[in-house]
Image 1 (cartoon, helix red, strand yellow):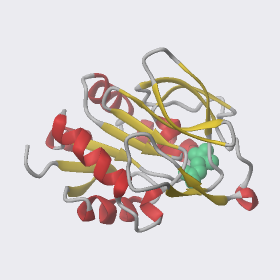
Image 2: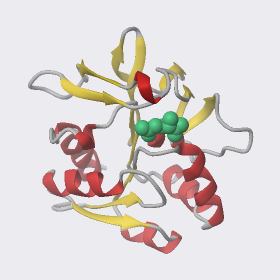
Image 3: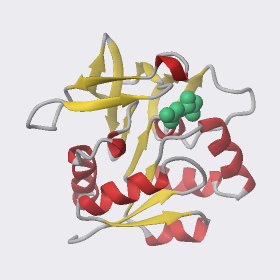
Image 4: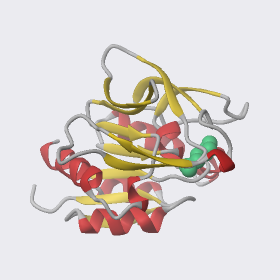
Length: 195
Ligand code: GLN
């Protein structure tokens, strides 16, 4: 595959920043709002934002089941922050009616690092991404409490898991789309190309 087409789930959240980062990482990037559009993409990013709202909108727009099916069928997917919550098979501290797409056999705790005023930046070393650590921007970020046997842990911060991969599904607690460093997006684009 030469230039993959990567959709950004555009229900809510920092969609525009991912579109810019994906284009900088040599993908064709486009927003995805309708189930039909899932058939036209080679990969999908689920952005940061608010996972409770994203869950609600995915149900309202009839996207939840199509997303689940597409991810289950192998669509390479990358979730950042709220997106990490969306690709978790199980979550803690979610709303009672909150649904996820799933895709990674892990338990993710929402707002684990604290509320908005506890947002922070930290250097994060990610397995498979060379040239030094990335600048991790954590905003009311989740962390991964535990993972199943098929999941690779790619990064930790202060003993907590903050980046994981299972097959073609990738997730980070932090927001590489906000930094201007496109190495994580490039890593995902290469995952999509190899898939
Ligand atoms: N705390 C948010 C949630 O639960 C995630 C925050 C973010 O994406 N920056 O969805």
